[in-house]
Image 1 (spheres, rainbow, N blue to C red):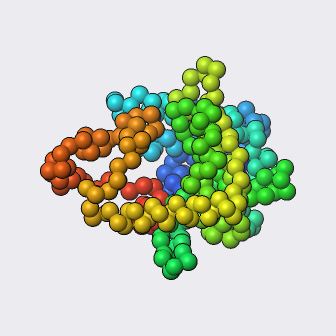
Image 2: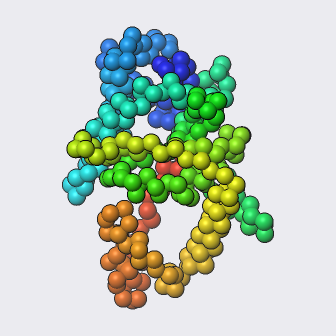
Image 3: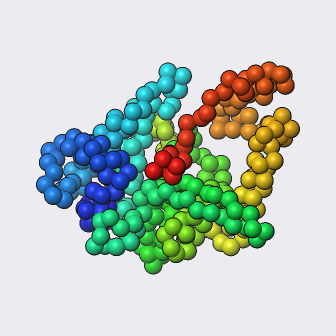
Length: 295
């Protein structure tokens, strides 16, 4: 947004909004040779210098995130995140001229922009049932080659980026629901999307480490999503106070290529599960939940 789209004030305000004023400016100040002078930021004379500045900023943001390596997880480590960031920047930066970031008002840096926007909407069904739906849209860009059509961005990290990973997005309810919600918060229909995948531990051994999957949604897709959404809510409300009677979908026990953490709970006796349940503590809120519920 700063250097490619030539909107430095919008970029600076977006950084302050997302990371907080102090953290953002602390990270900006760490970029080699950078001294804040108004909006004179990333004044790179060529792509090579811009790349180095951008990587240094990204590494500063990662370092200030509070993330600490887990000895039991050798994949999602800070080092691997840095490697994935290098891959992401090298792939995205040369193509960004084809994907300008949505800006509501070119003159107002505090206007709505297509970067990290939380949505908090109410879905109303034909029978009057209302359901609160929250989440975060990673990005909204314009597709230059399709008449500047709006395209919702969704960024993902994954352990593998094979054909199966790419195919699952064709019918993904998350993409459908996010396009639906993004259309509401941005104020115009959004049916195009793209999922950008980066391998969290790049090995560069012949397999994909970065892929982009273009997607299109239509009225039938949104209806299918709404039916699933309602079914999921109804099931939750039916069993939220009586988990013993809830059906168990055991195909999910090894989803995402690792055993579910609740297998010991589910394999316990009925009495044992009650004891375990009483010892459980609330899970951390998701980033979207924190943004919506805690401001």
